[in-house]
Length: 180
Image (cartoon, rainbow, N blue to C red; front, side, top):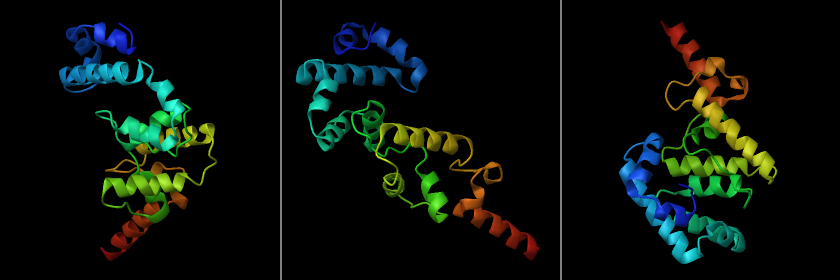
């Protein structure tokens, strides 16, 4: 089938649905969305979205990516970073809580605040693709395997001694055990 706009538009909707079925829920909706995106890339960018993104300022490239259905700030950040367009301080969308837990012991309630705080913390890293990709991948792995949103595994965490969240949990357990 292929992934160019022309190839996606030439593929039948049933072919797209089958190709997308393993990737998540509602493949028929995702297939229609993909065709819509392919049409837009073909019509507005002559089939070369990446070329257009490379020619515009980074903020405009970010805004353009977010204008596509299903792409928010985390997705646009990730694309710009891993596509080597801009060394953005990208944060895995499913674990912005990791950085704020380590730093402060708590997580800002709204997702957007947690994401912004985590991104701000990662800005301290060298602004290189290598450093920021590595940080992204480490955060993602840490958030998926140890610092889970619910039921974090602080006892298995190699940085628990420097993590405010883990220290607070340990203190609460000791205080709670002593009170019994």
